[in-house]
Image (cartoon, rainbow over all chains, first blue to last red; front, side, top):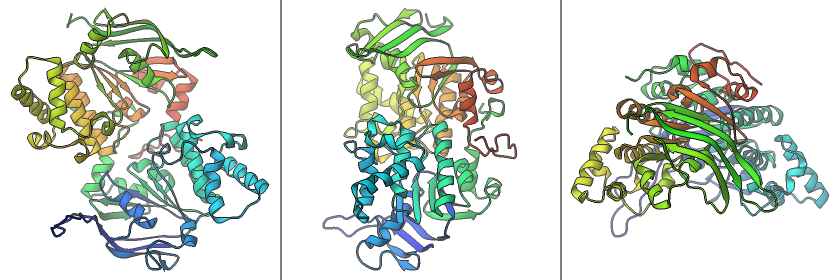
Length: 266
Length: 277
């Protein structure tokens, strides 16, 4: 469904009266595919280029080289920006749930905005859809009038998810969507995402640095290091026993979950 | 004073919201004790009052909005009745603080070096600039940061989050405080940087004998560092126990919920938490 073909990218620094000098490349020769109903985990340390790749796939950043094919169509080919129809099928949920919403808008307005942009709904129908979406993400329809400051982080992330699924997209980019939540909320949101994936036939690109979160949700995990795709595995176990130094570093940095298995540091 | 066992004693701390219509109790009956060189972990989900407790200890709550009662003693010295000027001397020098978001803790318009030296020279006014610089560089080198003298000239936005967090630890360490309050020190970092920061905190405790109040919602962090754990829920400490005891035999229902919310997949074969929900 989504095909990333040999994408490379570097942020060019514009300098007056000087030629753009050597710019380090952020992404080098990335290729992968995501099938319908599948979840690809994109794993890496900060600065590995995960979020840049996410932006490129969402059509927010044209890559220096390479193509992004969404259902066979190059998303950067048609015009400067993606076509409106294509944008409908690609949605995103960001890490920081507070800055992803307008604090002046109510939950109903936040979730209703994509509906207003794409579908002409009557007042009653619109209200019904919003209530339905709120219930799908585990909130109640009575929360529709609340504003972001009345929700906790986990609840607000649910509203972000409701906004993302409002138009029944095909692919959602989850850019560190659970990283800033506490463990209890993380578990809830991960199981919600798994449920939605099954019921809506959604595909995810799940960007994270937490291999355990990736293993619970993803069908396939790709590891990035310094802009390169270093390993791609369908099975998380294979990653844990991987020999690649970048993967090893990620795996070895995971803290044990019980004080009896503490890492020894002296 | 330095060698007395107890560094921090918090007794019956209560924090209420001064709200005329509906006064609200935010923290209730908080008792905490920290010995020299020990690490107390404070866990609980967001909104349970962890950060409020640390702000209350640092006397950073606005008395117009919050009513604070109870006693907070540092080396036996009562902090709640201290005048602002005295308290300002204690903050930083005797109680260090490491904040959650390193990006917001620094001023973006000054270099790391000038902010570091400012901290040093505020607390030691007769330190010359050159001496302060020297101390700062050696503190950064101590923290395993590469090229400390070049780092001094960098602006905060030129460093990664993990590096900034280590700079912040270096700043709070170089004044040799008796107590460091680390409020979610690794939440904003990726796993690799998290490990580096935790290792430095561990060194701070073993080498300098600093007591650390470690606030986190990540039980991995807590299980790695803490000696004792206090579990908070809705402004109350519901359970407090030694770390092994707490992980093996959680007594309170809420602690069990927290422990069960650990990542669903356990690594390296031991699949003790396959599916919890």
